[in-house]
Length: 197
Length: 368
Picture 1: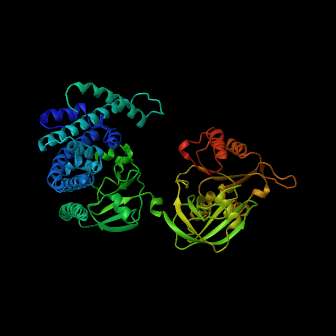
Picture 2: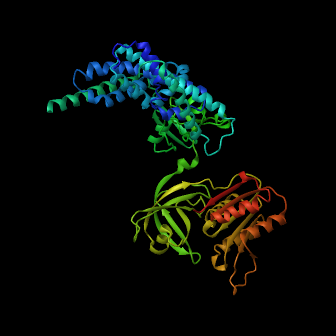
Picture 3: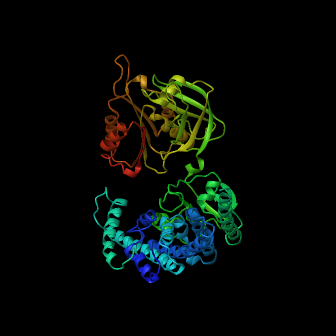
């Protein structure tokens, strides 16, 4: 499906037209829970981008150099999850030990996304669409950046809503879901821009 | 076929082994903070391997801080106070902490790691919640529908006067599952081995029917405790206790505890009942009243029996409370109410608020 496509086109497509959260609805849990504060949302977005980029490449190699030669493609779900979890844990420990400043801005978010479905979803898309390693790298980065963009936008909107008079029954998750719906519709506007899914 | 299965197993185990070896290695090299001491509420000290989150460290020591999301930082329930300086509040915590909490060292225990000796404070009741085996040592009627139940515990229980325990009632008759019900402790907290509960027979109530009709002396039970926010606050305001029926239980415990610490505050105990037959522990409270000039016991009967020579207050508890408060005039008061939801709402909404008792000075324990 993705054979021969320019990796940069794939990256733009992943960030905008098939946005991880607003078109594919992946990573919803932390998207709603951590979008209350702009700074926090920014940190989580950064972490998702970082992890998605690296796990895409990592799993690309695990899939094509271990699972495919052995004919064990059907094991990919469990293997991907394990690789992601281990990578995230490892990264978190290293950052925590060696860079307290980076830990506060990035490391602390890592455990939150160990089992984030956006990460696994990104990796699986990459496999299903037969991306090359380079395409996978930029696809992972693009997907993460798209998720990052969406959570910053949502956090900014929620920040504005704080002073607004919202019916109490809708306040909180209710109004957030409505906003996400409207944001998803707005992102459909990008769909003509890049001719791939 | 077999070969394929074997290959699968080998590959999965191989990948898992490589990754866990990596993790273990880095856990040992990078995440190694040695043995650290965690001191809880200045009372208990636990020694643990550093590097894990505080939430999981405490859980491994069987101290369960509530957490609905399981450590993902999305529920904000696992708050504890950290007295040692362990660095700034993380961005993942900040949305769940208000200004006062952030300033007083409250943190989310799922987000912070134990890396050095740490002093923490957790709500006392979390510390005290435990499972106790109990033996029924006596069961007697205090009125026609309320029983006093005394339980001997296998080990000491710690609680604040006014708190409650959960009693697990075994299956009986047509009730196939064990039921759990909350009962306030009516004995004072300095009595740690034997606790007393007051149980009113609720028509068709699963647990109360069992206690009234089936429970026998020397029976073994299980209780969980202690829970609840209904306990006496420190202040200098007058104390207004209002109870109906078995709602007397936590207040009896509080009053008995006050006997030990001394009754310095002006204290009124309004006890609402229908008739003389509903009164209980009258002698106890009359004696307290006789011995302490600041304690006043005001039983009020809404429908005294015709043949009784009742000389005390008559009328609904709300009316009696209202007339006493009106007579006393304007005073700073703290109110503690325990009984049926109807009684509590009526007292709070139509009497206490009218007499200017602040909402944050009203505490209640509603019987569901």
